[in-house]
Length: 298
Image (cartoon, rainbow, N blue to C red):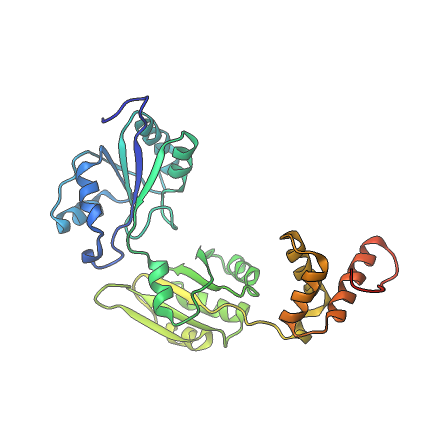
């Protein structure tokens, strides 16, 4: 191994192609040849990748997948502390994004080991870009629970989130998932089902959740990423006093003066400042158990 205990090694997280091997970043080949240890989610897939790239792994290859991640992490950390350059690759995309890697990164950081990355393809970002939905703010939710009740509960947690939502899903569950999304978010919410990204049979199906659920009922194949439009902004009438008060408090916690926060929330909701002010005063007095009236903005 290179280096010494006085010169910790480096953990390299390497993005791998999500479909087309030609998308492999140029640095990936160099890292595969120079790493002291290559930790791979699937060593057979790694072998196919290196053959396609025309490179040979220069160091030791070890498996690092969900089943042995906890047990193997300490071994890899010790190699890093000893000065090794450890390359982590998963089956597709970036390590630790719904793939093994988080535990190793956290443990390496704890031991002051340098962590860097070879940026590469990402199913999350590719699906977002192709979806036709807003991408200025988004939230990646990974895989949903397999049990119907837990899945629906998880979806309802983000039903009012205004950010675009991104999920991974298995082909044999996609019809049930789209139906559950329709129940939690409303059947008319726009979405896109992206399957086999960058591969020969790449397909992006766009429509309402109702339309997509009907389409998926006949069966869908391949690796799937689902992008769902965020919740629409509520009208002033739908917001209610509790939501107005919550928004004012969020702004106050961020450092705004109450008067400024009330004015900003009123402008966002298209309401008179007095209406928002009265809601804040009523909530304050309710907390204190006193009368719900105020005399002026302060």
